[in-house]
Amino acid sequence: MNRMPSWMPPFLKALVLHGAIIAVLFWRWQSQPEPVVAPPSPAPEVIEATALDEAQVEAELERIKAQEAAARQAEQARQEKLKRQRMAEERRLRELKRKQQKEKKTLQQLAEAKRKKAREEAKRLAELKKRQQEEKARLAKLEKARREAEKKRLEEQKKKREEEERKKRLAEEKKRQQEEAKRQAEAEALRQQQLAQQRQRINRQAAEATAKVKQKVERYWLKPASYQSGLSCTIQVRVIPGGEVVEAKVIQSSGDRAFDRSAEVAVRKASPLPIPDDPALFSRFREFKFIFKPEG
Image 1 (tube, rainbow, N blue to C red):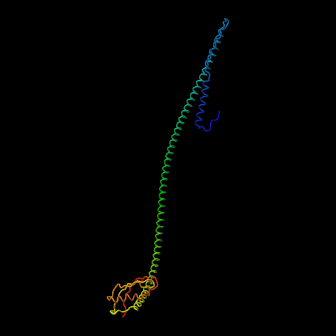
Image 2 (image 1 turned 90 degrees about the vertical axis):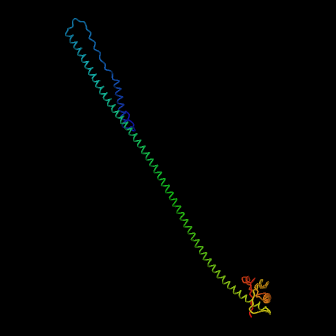
Image 3 (image 1 turned 90 degrees about the horizontal axis):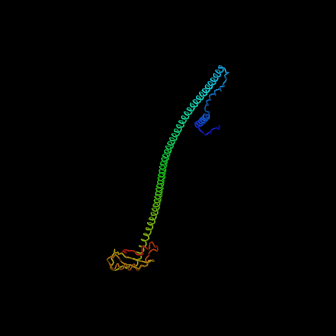
């Protein structure tokens, strides 16, 4: 008999083996010849003989009866044996059927257990998949929150750096402005000092020039007959570069027209006046007011 495949489960191997045994026994039982009842032996031909002894006849009859009894006993024994064999075969078949039913039930139970296990495994896998999806969603949510928090943190850091840089620039700008203001203040102070010095110099020079103009005008002044001591008038004088007088006009009279007139004449006669050539000074004498008040 060929060996069964190694992949076949043990219970399936046993089921196939029992089926094969049942088939062989059934075939042998079908092929067993029906018990043949031996026909009764033909009565011995009675030969008419007037010479046979009745004792011989009786003996022959007893022998024939004994043979028939032995044949019946043998047939009966054979029938009993066959009956026992059939009963044993029926018991074996019933036991085999019971085993098959038991194995079938076992297989059904195994199959149901397998299906139940498969359902439980499917349920477990579905729950596991659901938990994995929930965990994935939770991790995705956490990752999203982390990215948003990180983005917010970076934005805050950026704003903080920008604010610090802005404050730094403002501080630097303020410092620069303060330094610039200080420099400008120092420069302005220096300029004001220089201007003050220049004004002092110009005022001094202007005073000197005015004194010289007064001296020169007084040299050309002719005292009128009506002059009284202490008279003075203000003359508007306009000159051109070089000190030449182009206009001399009393703008504030002394009350003595002759004195006023003599003062105007004296200014014109004193032309050119001793005006400084320095442009800064000349600008002050291009058109100036001159108070004429002779001494004595």
